Image (tube, rainbow, N blue to C red):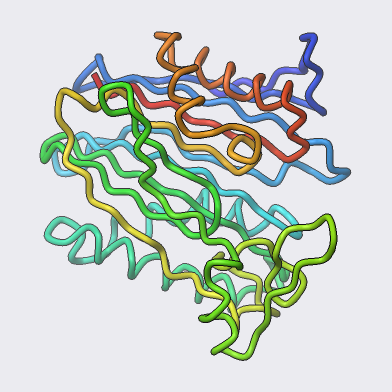
Length: 280
């Protein structure tokens, strides 16, 4: 299903466009699509994603995530391969999935920090969504500024929290760190990182949290679709703008492509990753 295509369109994002689609076998009305575009920075693509359905204990579960790496792609790649596995294997997942997600985020970060000789000193943001069809709910967790937005009766509902250094200055300073803003730049932890929470980043970890914000959302007929995307989209597009654009396109893969194309047209220079999950 995964396709890696050289971009041959007029909007000319940097080096490649990666797209795909799928559906839930147990409920064919639930479909998803994704699109990833490399940004203009002179380094390999640092965004990774997960978009799939699994049947676990006879329950259909959708797993969706965007991992936006920085100072290298290794931590984001590790998260792609391990974070959901760590969440689902928590002994209390079925009774308390939010607590399982919290514990898995913490354990995964500890493992990353112990393996910097392999993964490097970089880090990654994360936004993860688990769609639990039997219980009709959506569990979303995030660290950093990748974002999850739900369309509910045509309205944008942000489910994640943008962990920006400016908002968490007090916590960072109490840990002995500082937040600076140079002219023409954004606030940064210790003058380096533009997010206040992330996986990895060993050199900053004493001042940096990996604790996720987690929400458990009941689903009903008013919930139309979910968008997960890296900040390469959200830097140039408001939540409601993204919702309005996706509502016009039935196919989720086409919708995710349109989000990425629009971000490029709006001069986003960052890597852009989008997942659209249609819930009807």
